[in-house]
Image 1 (spheres, rainbow, N blue to C red):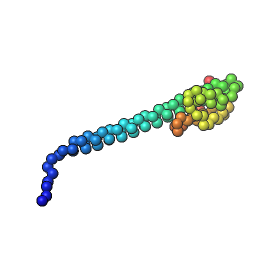
Image 2 (tube, rainbow, N blue to C red):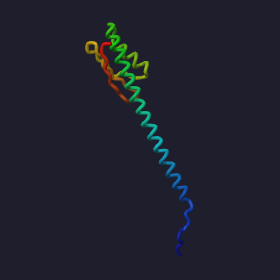
Image 3 (cartoon, one colour):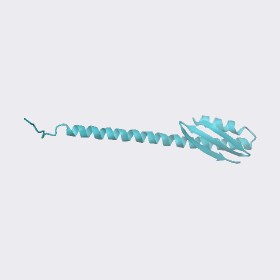
Image 4 (spheres, one colour):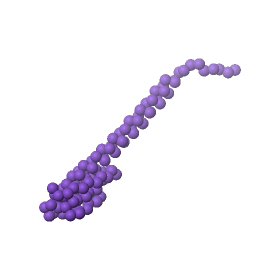
Length: 107
């Protein structure tokens, strides 16, 4: 004897759970993306400030890369690279995997 199921009991629960899982996944992806964008902006800020601090120090006859490193440290960034070409200072700063480059010259 065959029995056909005509009741839809439980379908709404399954649909609700699927929608909830999709929304949670979307929220997690959004949080990760926003976090990465924040790291990129913080790295760029540290690179910009570090290059300006380095150029200012170079104009005064001080160690440009030491000033750039101190500024990067103060901005919770890692200074990956610092190059001085005359009065110009190029800095590469990194924040949690996001890197940014900036160059500043005599002020």
